[in-house]
Image (cartoon, rainbow, N blue to C red; front, side):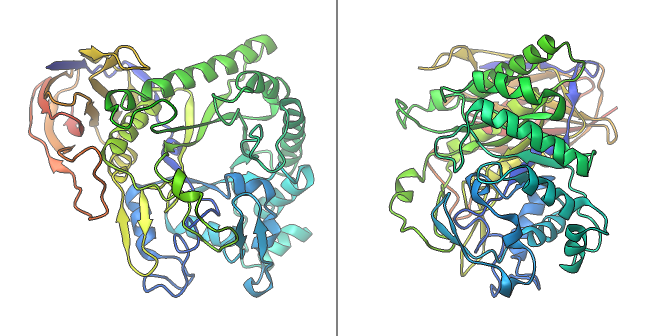
Length: 500
């Protein structure tokens, strides 16, 4: 089987906003307690943060982390997580029916984010709280000094403002599962007024309005239109959430359909972009609303196990999907789809980062292990830099139960002009056949191959609990304006060229 692509430096989709490689931490299950934060663990530092987790997050090179939720957000009192730890209240977490000790709160998150070289994507509770509480949180975080809340921050150990720029106005507010769920008109009015108040405190903020929590919700579409109609002038981004797995009528052996689900993601993004632009046209606005895809991942393994977890525990085992090799292949395709839409997707958050539907897992009394999905995310976040180039790839296609014309060759190319590095991400979705991949580099000339790896050869249902999954070297023929490589069946591949 053959495939090809033509790579042209002038054919640019968009510069890459590095925040597209963001992730997400929520007070849910073991994401924080025994994940990020575990005082007394042999790997814990002086602040109680697990250094083995910090090192793994650094390896992923995550630039932005959304916090504190998630469903947890919609009943959270941010004030509970500041001040002396022995004076912080223990609360019922109504979202996940856990006990929240508040030993990890705002200051701990900010300190931890700094240690992993990430900036915060902070979220405000618009479920059970509202305008004043959100404005107060901005004042506490961002106002220099001289007011009650800014001086309280300084008293609590942060002399300098946190200077948080990106803020989410609630979470999944149309979801019937959400504490304080709203109708579209209720949320639109609250979000708009909250945005106005927050900007009065700090007019440099970038604000994210909630889109519908799922394109499968009956509110989808109408929700986006209603919210943007009222909030358009006061927000910068609209959020999207989407998870993939073997759902509903899916057969767990239906791999061809599973690997085509990135087509659904692409259609979803383009549909929401069209909604945003329709409101822009109707308002005759010169402002463009971009997208914050602040929850995405594969998620389906843990659902049955979670129903057996007793409520009202601290840090119970919840949503601990153990990912297999086919999940890694889909995550690779989803990442490439986000890059191909980098002209409008400026922020994205893999949900989540540690233990909870996550690439990084911890043993409470042991170390850290990397899930299968760790590898494609790590490579794209580290090497997908500069600009995304238009995809001109060609290959045979196939049809699955849900999708038509799925290319066997899934690929995207990025070019970092500063380092003169051309990076090609490529996946062969054929289950049995190799794919001879020819690259026409046109105006690029290969100086040398920096690196070439493949991730393949594992049973699609195999996971990495034994720690044996690894990237393997890949042979590439490259000279002048041409390159060629053979992609193995069901393989994730990364080619990096120094060019001139």
